[in-house]
Amino acid sequence: MFSSSSQLTNSIFDSNLSNFDEICCNLFGFQYQNNEIYRKYCNYIGVFEPNIINNIEKIPFLPISFFKTQKVLSSTQPIQKVFSSSATGGMGQSKHYITDLNIYIKSFVSGFERVFGKTENFCFMALLPSYLDREGSSLIYMVQHLMNLSKHPLNGFFLYEHKTLSERMEQLERMNQPYILFGVSFALLDFIANARVEMKIGKIIETGGMKGRKKELTKMEVQNRLREALKTDFIYSEYGMTELLSQAYAFNDGMYDCPPWMRILISDPNDPFSILEANKTGLINVIDLANINSCSFIQTADLGRKNDSGKFEVLGRMDNSELRGCSLMIS
Image (cartoon, rainbow, N blue to C red):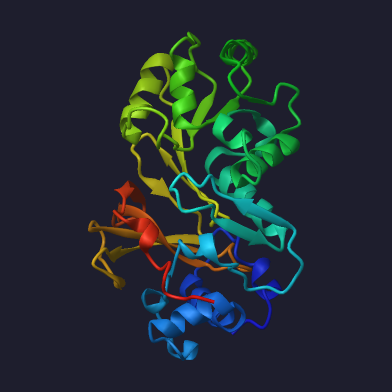
């Protein structure tokens, strides 16, 4: 068992991680001992002896709702940053207390470069008005840091300056400069209503975000509209959230690919402690080793399905998901 998170930090971002299961079981023991909220939850569901857990399918996944009501921490180090959600669900904001920002930076840079290549090769632009309008967004922190690493003079955030963004993209296309446009779904759809730029060099990474803003569209409907309007096939999706320090990316087919230090397990919606086999629909549970200092085993409120290769798709939200776990522990 790990005696400190530093023993794990330097090894989790390896490209292979052939000992993933062993690391998970050891990390579970560490977080059980050092995370009071997680330990209480484990005890509540009958897990009192962490040493007997030798299979990742037996590790308890903490319902994500606890991040709305509790300080989920496995570290006693000073808090460097607090990331918060948008609270669109009506039950308050999730808060993720970060004691080592370097772990988050290492995770999102390594995860990005694994899919897209070296950060310094890109110009980064972001159309993320709903995130810029509030404080505490982990996505804004990530994109800003990628811009800092890139150092490209045309990097920039945009609120509603669609004409300026379109001109910037056209300029980069003429320069033959590879670029990334991060965009929340509803803002990208507003942008293409008037934009006439053709994307041949650039890539879009859409981050979701249709809830409550306009008529609900599926991810594939959003991507099809973007693909048609911008004359491009380079549409990616990002699966990330306030409660996680790692991201999965999907290209066109909606199937997300995790980095080696992140893994998805699907559980039965009617029995969240029962892990389903591949190609079955259920609740998405995330193992994120980068969450060393909070909780690496998170049961989300998303419904999904995982294929035989380990890639997964998101199919929707669990009904009444905000009620899951909220009343289990009163402290």
